[in-house]
Amino acid sequence: MSRHAILIVDDEADVRDSLGLLLELEGFEVLAAGNGAAALELLETRTPHLIISDFMMPWMNGREFVTRTKERDSTRDIPVILISGIEPAPPKPWDEFLRKPADIQVLVKLIEQLLRQRELRS
Image (cartoon, rainbow, N blue to C red; front, top):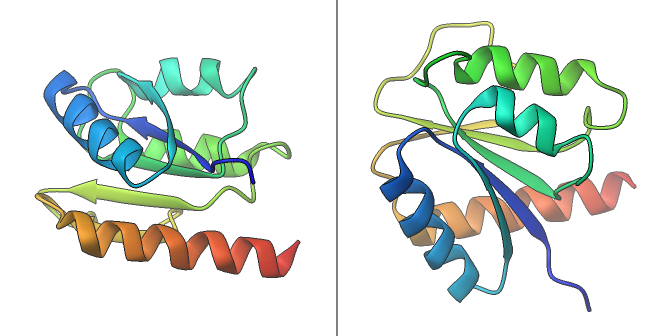
């Protein structure tokens, strides 16, 4: 069975690294990008099973990144979890929201739930 790939998009290297390590320990393959523009570029060559994105990032915030991801045919169906210290106002193009700091067990359960839902739709 292949591992599910998760793309982490966060401008804070410490967050990307620590979250990535925790998710790798849970058995996921981790891809990472430091901002929305870099993540969109990565999505040209890789298609993760799920995306976790920060909201407040320079150059392109999480709302713009997720909106652009959902507009593309090739990435429209990828579930997105937005993680932030503040809950952004609508519209909400992401699938789920968690407040930082996110409890890793809650995050893993949410990831597994979204992956199951995506597989059932396929």
